[in-house]
Length: 254
Image (cartoon, rainbow, N blue to C red; front, side, top):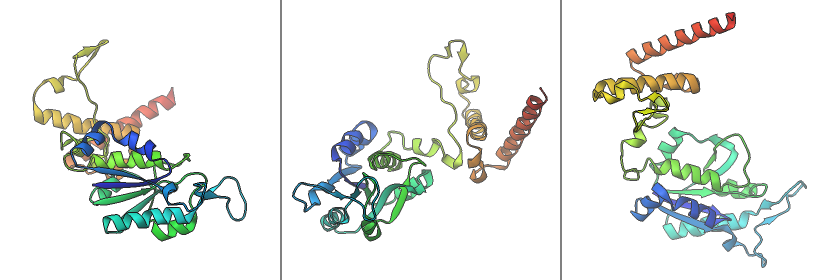
């Protein structure tokens, strides 16, 4: 997987991504991360890449030419026109399904805006996907790009030491991950669930699935509409829902 980040702050993204699991994957040659400095493509003698917006308004807007020239130069270098993801709160909200789709790409370009955004003509020329990490506004697209790259990279074969990890973490089958425990067995009077100490792998797997279902119902019930459940798991979910209704009814009576 090759990431190309068009940004005004290359040090920010490179310092953040060349560490921990992602940094080790880069060292192994499983990933490559390139930060392209958009400022290198301005023709303005003082190095400016922004100007006041037509029609008035607060702030400055990044100019189209440096952005487009940076992308076109990248395309010439790699011999293709890769998918361009623009980081914007106006885009689709990034999720695990989108990450899985993007992980199949060989090259991805992340376009990071700044100031009040980028001249619309640049976006029309080069952007293929508008993506957001949430309904809030940040000072630039670098942090969202780093979040997405981290998430996508975990799905690239070999990046995680345990290749099964990406399959069993949160949002697998549209369920949240089950609770995790490690030593000691007792901490501040709280014990590790006995089933996890039993060594009975089938029982442990059943417990973990049930805990995932229960946690999803409690914290993200919206995910359950598309959860991949067996008939028995669906019955377990209905039992949990009935218990929830009973508890709610009791609390309303008090």
